[in-house]
Amino acid sequence: MIKYVQCVRRHPDLDPAEFRSRWDDYIAIVRRISEGSGATRLTSGFSLVHEQNALIQSDRGTAEPFDAVVEVWWTSGANALAHLGKEELNGDFEALQKLQPTLIDLEHSSFFFIDEELILGD
Image 1 (cartoon, rainbow, N blue to C red):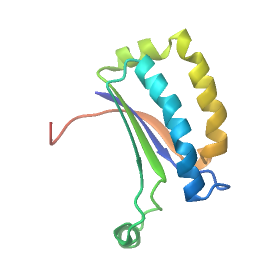
Image 2 (image 1 turned 180 degrees about the horizontal axis):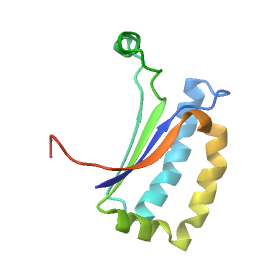
Image 3 (image 1 turned 90 degrees about the vertical axis):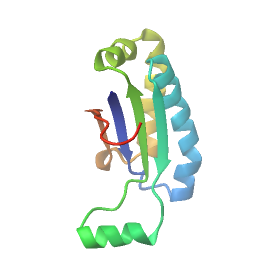
Image 4 (image 1 turned 30 degrees about the vertical axis):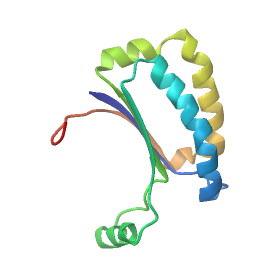
């Protein structure tokens, strides 16, 4: 399984509520690209504001959690690359690139592909 992961920090000019309210527009574009590229799964989630997160950070010396995470899954890298090059997705990619700098702190976020190996579960 090939997965594209976005670990996202919100733009510093946005408070958490505004970031979350604008997130639906972002995910709508990501969904169109995912569907058009033959992805088999798309997930999105927000970090929880919980005392356990602060405890983990303090105990382990880690950075603050990301504001959101997106995961797009494909059955193979070749399948993903073949579909991501589709000309009909260009408009969605352009819309995503236009929206990202107003929503996301790109310098402090991370986007990457991984080769996922299932260790436990279905």
